[in-house]
Amino acid sequence: MLRSWKQRLIAAVVVLVVLAAGGAWLYVSHHARTPEYAMEKITQSLEKHDADTFFQYVDVDGVLDASYADFMSGAIQTEQPMNEEAKAAVESFASMVKAPVVKSFRDAIQSYVATGSWPAATGEETEALLDPSVALQKAGLTGVTLQGIDRVERHAEDDSAVAMVRVRLPESDEDFVLRVLLTPAGDGPYRVTAIENYRDYVVMLAKARRSKVDAYLTETASIVAQHETAMREAETQRAEILSAGTLGSSATRQALKDLMEQTILPDWQARKAELEATDVPEAATALHRLRLRICDLYIGYAEGYAAWMSDKKAATIRDAEQKLKQAKTLEQEEKFLTKRIGGAS
Image (cartoon, rainbow, N blue to C red):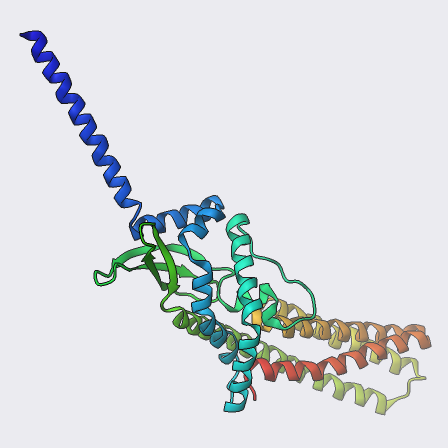
């Protein structure tokens, strides 16, 4: 009797184990075909640099193809106001470069998933959007950080789902929630096939970057204006010194040397230091470097001119004047870049 009871107990335990294992298998099998599972695998693939798994759950080619028009609109048309003729030219250009741009994106994404790093700038003279680093920056991919997945909403009518993916960019002080569309692949897993609000993302990014650029231009304009006033005053002093004496006079040369070393040189050094302390957005990098180069040339000019007051060598003044000439030339380019970045037509 006891033995029979033990046998029935063992059989019951075996049945429960089999049922539990079967239930677990059914659960895992079902869960593996849910959009939530797909998002889990995508997140894990990014953490583990598993490109094969990432491409299994993300239709990269489909997403890029669907997002291309939004990308070009945000990358080009939001840069400057355009008339109809310019828009037509942009659309023609966008159509011509679609294949190489999409390919560069695909290669860059695969590299990023596998290594965790985006490709660096090529340094070659080429169309800006054909440089992967430039295109990725304009598309809002470089620098973006995943903040988390808020939720996944399912659509009963077509079995699709939308994952609310929260991201943040260095250019923005607020998070943005991407609506990532997932669709079932027959009997296979859910895959990401589109980003429904990518255009809104591009517009938000363009506005955030525009705000950063405007802040930079406003701050640096104030710096430049302040120092230009000081330079006009210094030029007035220089004219007064020359009108009161001659370069052959040691007193005149000493006065000019003092003006250069005690007023003009420190002012350009201060201007450079103040510019270096500003927050420089990506779009203003070229302008900022140009301004610092101009500062260096004026600093070199002031140092050379002051030295000439003592050594009276022709080579010294020739070198100083060459730096001044270069600075004057670059100032014209600076004005052009400032207008361009500021949105002037």
